[in-house]
Image 1 (cartoon, helix red, strand yellow):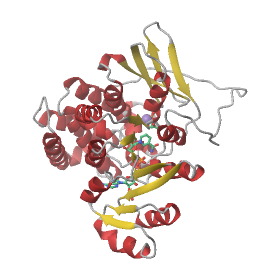
Image 2 (tube, helix red, strand yellow; image 1 turned 60 degrees about the vertical axis):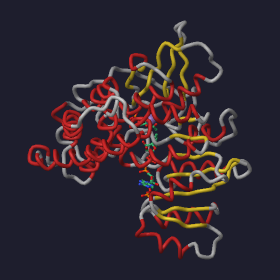
Image 3 (spheres, protein in one colour; image 1 turned 180 degrees about the vertical axis):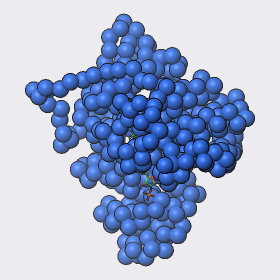
Image 4 (cartoon, helix red, strand yellow; image 1 turned 90 degrees about the vertical axis):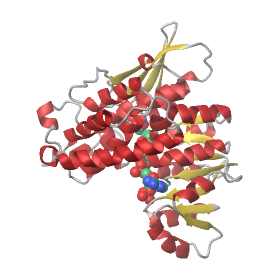
Length: 390
Ligand SMILES: NC(=O)C1=CN([C@@H]2O[C@H](COP(=O)(O)OP(=O)(O)OC[C@H]3O[C@@H](n4cnc5c(N)ncnc54)[C@H](OP(=O)(O)O)[C@@H]3O)[C@@H](O)[C@H]2O)C=CC1
Ligand SMILES: CC(=O)[C@@H](O)[C@H](O)COP(=O)(O)O
Ligand SMILES: [Mn+2]
């Protein structure tokens, strides 16, 4: 029985992970559930899966969760520190990091330090501190199994291969604005941006997909997961999201992992690796006619992708700056403060303003993240007339 901790159990990845566990009660059980605000759903999940512990990170919901679970043998905690402390429990075999954003970094590091296998959905962890996290995982001999669909695809293509690879090809759907002109992009709304053509995901990643920042973050994530140079990572637009990514080997052969867009497969694979188990997930039917197309990304219309690649080339704390500024900007866009095309402006401004650190420590990342957030808010306030949402 694999005992799983789910950080972010009430979100898109978290709820799909529980769907996977529900289908396989003979091989998985839930040890820990963590959420931020959705306390009623957390309580419902706790009653169904009977974990050892639940954590509601937002303290203002703690009493309600505690009372609702009073008749169950479940420990209830609150606050950020309790997440960091609970993932190290001897009862936990694997930690699924499905919180969104920078908040995922500290618990992931804590789980690695405690020798827990990681199923990694929270890409921001590797974007911010890829070197630190992968070094810690190597020292502790902890596997980091990717959940992100592209990285799971690459991981699946690499199983059984021993020779070096030439490059990887990350596919991007292109998002809802793939064919928009720059002029049209200036006027898109929050509702337009949240309308992803192929995937149903949390709000933050959906906005990142629309700006292609998601693909930029995934390039950085891939660098650290697979130990690649930036030149070995290519991005191609593939609007159907059927080819989840590809690997090209040194002899020129290309392997792809394919399937209908459904995150339950990469989640389940991360849980069962190196085995595969049965699933009822929808199957691709090749007897039906399908058209698979590929095209080049356009960084003029989607500058966030170029900024992410620039931060990767700069290294040090620059991807951390990129990530924090993007989190602030996406949040401002979702609150309808700034326009869609102002998101990369905030990120670019922060990357120019925050001092570069070549070899950041964990404390430097914390400092960079908080300085960047302050700077990004300042930039938004200063340019609010120019950047406002209309
Ligand atoms: N959704 C997808 O298909 C994919 C997602 N990912 C990555 O997985 C991660 C999660 O994405 P997704 O599921 O879409 O996001 P959601 O917004 O749907 O869910 C986020 C989850 O994290 C919880 N959470 C947020 N902040 C905190 C915090 N500070 N402390 C504790 N819990 C917190 C939320 O709790 P609550 O809801 O209770 O507030 C929720 O359970 C992201 O990093 C994303 O990039 C990667 C590939 C695909
Ligand atoms: C499902 C998943 O892994 C997402 O990260 C997905 O890739 C988003 O789609 P885009 O290709 O549009 O960024
Ligand atoms: Mn992805």
